[in-house]
Length: 260
Image (tube, rainbow, N blue to C red; front, side, top):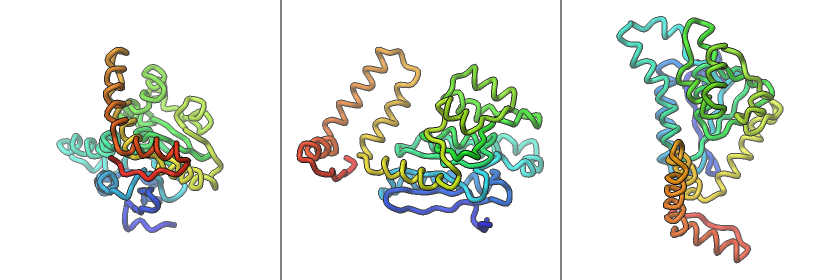
C-alpha cells in the first residue's frame, strides 16, 4: 500500500503535471490537510510554465469517497461553514485554471470525490469506476457535486441522481457523456497519459482560449456568445502561436509553441 505520509503527491514530466490523492487507507477521503494541499498543488501546476495539462489520479483502489465524515463529526457548529468551503475550494481552482485538467478515476468516486472528478475537463474512467452523489444516503445532500453533475447531464437528470443517491456505472457515465473513455483497470494510466500527451502537444494559448471561451459563453444568448467567441478568436489568430501553427502546417513540420 502506498504510504500516506503526504496526502498529495505531485510530479511533472513531458508537460504533464500529475496530482495524486494519497490517502488510500481512508479511500482518499478529504480531510483538511488533503483539501488544502490539493488546492495548493493546483495553484502550483497552473503557475508552472513546464506544465501544459494536469492529471488528477489517486493511490489505491478508489478515487475518493468524499469528505472524511469523522472529521465532519468532530467539527464544532461554528466551524462547519469554513470546513465546507475548504472542501469545495479545489473545484473553484479547477474552474479558474486555463490549463486543461483530466480526472483519472477507478473504483468509488463518490460525493465530493465525484464533485472533484466532475469539475475536471475530461474524465477517463476504468471499468471499475462508480460515480455517485451519495450524501443523501447518510442524511446529507450533494449540492456542489450535483451542480458539477448538472453541467454534464442537465439539471433535472442531475437532481434525480442527487435525490436518489444512485450509482452511475462507468458504462452509464460514458453513455451520458460524462466519461471521455472507459478502459480496463490495467489500462487506465496508459490511456490517461495518452490523452494528456495529446493535449500537451497543442498550443497552450489555443487550449487556454478554448477553455476560457466556453466558460465565458456559457449561458449567454446566442448573439452575445457568438460576439464573445469572435473576439477571442480574433485575438488568438493574431498571436505568435497561430502564426507558428499555420506556418508549420504549410511547411509540413511540427510546430514549436511559445504560448503567446
